[in-house]
Amino acid sequence: MKLTILGCYAATPRTITNPTSQVLEIKNRMFLIDCGEGTQVQLRKNKIKFSKINHIFISHLHGDHFFGLVGLISTFMLLNRESDLHVYGPKGVKEIILLQLRAGNSFTGYNLYFHELESKESEVLFEDEKVIVKTIPLKHRIYTNGFLFQEKNKERKLNIDKIQHLGIDVVYYQKIKYGGDITLDNGTIIPNHEITFDPEHEKSYAFCSDTVYDENLISLIENVDVLYHEATFLEKESHLAEKTMHTTAKQAATIALRANVKKLVLGHYSTRYESIELFKTEAETIFTNVLLAEDGKEFEF
Image 1 (cartoon, rainbow, N blue to C red):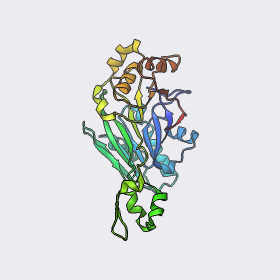
Image 2 (image 1 turned 90 degrees about the vertical axis):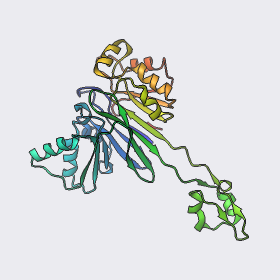
Image 3 (image 1 turned 90 degrees about the horizontal axis):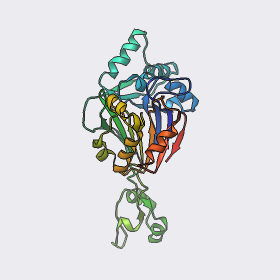
Image 4 (image 1 turned 180 degrees about the vertical axis):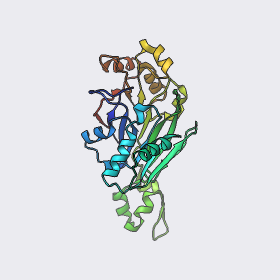
């Protein structure tokens, strides 16, 4: 599971910082999460292939989370994209993007699908044989969702030595991987657990930005491997966090602790602070395994 931070700062882009956008690679799928202004430039800087992005998830319709979307969609057209593109985001995202395209007499040479969201309950957005993606309802000034990405490891690992010792034919390997028992020629039934090992741990990643401190998140993200949680302010500006419906580093760490996550990645920093290390220092008073998002930084989990 690989996470590339394209941008992780709040509000407006600057020459040295970029608004929210990141790429998650999981089970050979590549998902773009949020698309702030300048996202496609950051994709190029980080040498991420545009053609591998088929699913884009937009948390909410504040500009620092989606102003880069129409530009990226247009660039896909200029690059002669042919594969389908799916955009998941709040109701209204389709109208906004199509209006911009129509006003510029633009078009796409590929199928563009919008999946507009309105539910305030968690729902499945995407699922195939390898990955499932669900919404995480957040509390912000406008309708907002986070996203939970989970691996699906259904296949068990073959105990080749035991299988070969029993003389089981290779044609049964797929059945065994998916939990099937085997009957030998002499009628003996071999339980699956005797000829397989448990599958690898199913990794998970939760993206939560933007939101006020909300303990309702805990049950939705419990035990995830990695939690990205906004930390716009430090605790001394908690009054601003409450007013703007954002979170402090200490509050993000509290959510991580209570949800028993393995790692916490902080981001969405206000640029009022001299150093983002201040966020890590504050969060570590509550939760020990804290990482800092930085533009262009890659994490492998």
